[in-house]
Image 1 (tube, rainbow, N blue to C red):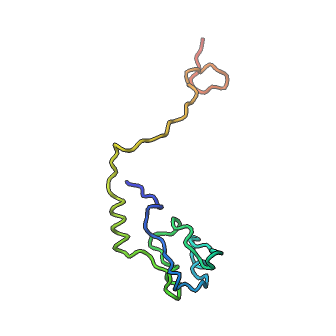
Image 2 (image 1 turned 120 degrees about the vertical axis):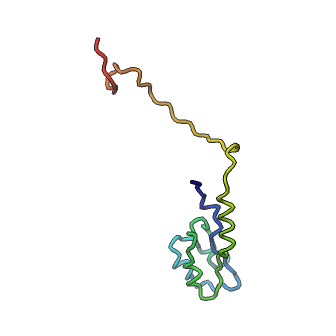
Image 3 (image 1 turned 30 degrees about the horizontal axis):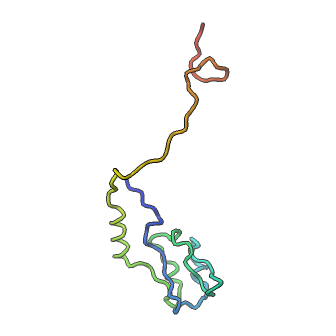
Length: 119
């Protein structure tokens, strides 16, 4: 089973600054806190796109001016198909090494677990 990184999913809103009237509805209703207030522009901005849940469109539904858009279904599906392509495993390198553990070869050591030997 392939694991897809959420940061690679093309599902997050875009804001049309000309249509946005900064009523904060997107910020108030987004359960994932994708938006933050931008003091410089005086408008909300998409600050955390990776938090957006694929398929969710609450922000688009509550925006009364139509300032928010999400990817079209076809665009999203084609991106998902590209991401699901098999990975060429020759180029993968796992940089994980299991930490060394004390050897279980010394069972007579005080507090050691394992078979006790009798002399």
